[in-house]
Structure formats: C-alpha cells, structure tokens
View (cartoon, rainbow, N blue to C red):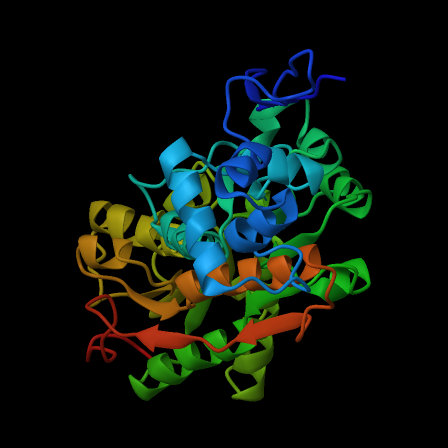
Length: 371
C-alpha cells in the first residue's frame, strides 16, 4: 500500500518509498542496505543510527563500521516517515479564533509580536514548528482542531465568544490557553495568564503617590475581552478600597472608532489620570488629547497595559503595566508539550506577576489641577 502525507495546501510532504519486485526500496538508501554494507543486521543499524533496540549491545568497532557504511552510501534518516509511523507532525498551531481580524506584528502595539516571540522560542526549544492563523487552512479554526495536522494548539485570543467557546470545548487535541483562566473551561486546559489585579494595583499605587485622586479607567466595549473585564473590576475594587469612590461613571468607553474618546475630551477633563486596558487604548489618549488642548502628562497622566517596545515609540513615552509576554508564550508551549507527551502539566495554571515601567506619560499632579 502507498501512503502519502500532505501539507496544508495539498502538496505531498512524504511518500513511502515504492518497492521493487524483490521488495527493496528504490530511490533511497535503506537501513537494510547499510546493514548489508556493514555486515550486520538491520536491528544493529537501527540501534547505532537511531538509538532504537536499546537492549542490544554493540561494540564501538561495530558501531563505527555502521556509521562509515551509512556515510559511504549517503544514508539519510527519513524524518517524515518516522513522524508518519508515530502519528506526529511536530507542528503547533496558534489559534486566533472566529470573528477576529488578522493580528499584526508591526504598525500598532507590539503585543502580538512579543507574545509570538515567546511561543516560537518555546516551540524551537522543543523541536516543533509553528503555524499561525490555521483558520486559513480550512473552513474554520475547528478544522485544525481535529484533522491531525497539529500535535497541539495554542489559543491566545482574550475573548472566547460563544462560538469560539463551543469550538474549544470540542477540541480533540492538546490545547493551552493564554490570557484565559483555565477555570473558565472547568480546568480542561492548562493556562498562562498575568496577575491582572496586581498590575492594576501597581498602576494605582504609582498614580496615588503622584497625588492623583480622580482616576479613570478606559476600554473598548466592542472588544470587551476577558482580561479587560478583570482589569476594569480590579480598578473599581481597588479605587473603592482606597476610599476614592470610583463608579461606572469613571469607566470611559472610548469605542473602537474613538467616538467615545472624542466626546470625553470635548466635554472637559473630569479626571487627572487614566489607566487604559491596553497600550493601544492608552495610546489613543496620547494621540488625540493635544487636539483638545490637553497636554500629557501636564493635564492628564496616562498608563497603558502590556509595556512593549511600542511604548517607547510614543510621545510622550507611555508608562505601562508590564506583563512578561515572551516568558508567557514560552511557558505556554512547555505546558503544551507536556500534554502532547501524555503528561499532566505541572502546574496546570501559571499566573505571572506584573511590573510597572514608568516613562514620560505620568507625572505628579500639577498646581492647577484639583485632586
């Protein structure tokens, strides 16, 4: 029987060698050929070249004779044939989910680039290749969850909609979540997240130390991903715990088209500082505030969340809560590989502490501002 393995676009990746009338492979140097050249059995060749049949003892002289025979004949191990036999692809898919646009490595926040740097680093460490946006390879991302093209999957989208959630529940291959707590799926999948509450705590500590009391939180309601909710709730809880009396009126919905931000700036500042749920949200304040006569940080201090190199490109440079995105991506792959190997990931849920990178977008409250 002839076997074929195809890649995602239908091109054959491996074809089992055809047999001659005598049953020998043609067009490739086989283990049997090396064995005949070295005067040993194929089992000995397998032991020397592939570390199989470990119960067999082979002298160093015999091993050297096998290695020389393989070199003389130009023998090369057929990795794809091995993977086919072991039902492995050594491929990890990165799922973005239904209903999201293509993520970008450059041009906006460097969040995706930083996270994927960690994912790729982790994959290479464990000998895996990575494929992005696997929904392009089939009708839906769910095709990639069941058709055997990937040994495991990384889900990094922060907003599992109803459709995406159902898709994840049906996933039949090992999967790890980034930014989504494993508890949201009854601990079915291992997860990697940052400590969002601690990150907001750091941001508020900094602003309060600078004299700010009227502090707002900004988000995009159309992209109310899971961690945005956690950060918003942590903001309200922390503000009230500090006796600063925050309410929903202190949560600014800037909207994806920024109409909400224009309305907020046009109505006159009600706050002396704002924390954005992401660097992209915070950057919108830096970009639009000058058009309304508002100077950052003199009139309004601004803090983002992620703290990638993008923050240093803004003017002023953006103070931001930092989450270790590269480390998180790398750790997610390590957990995934444990699952692929049939082991229970330990620990099953990783929560990384945040930091705060202070740049030029925050300052102490000015004399002309009220607390």
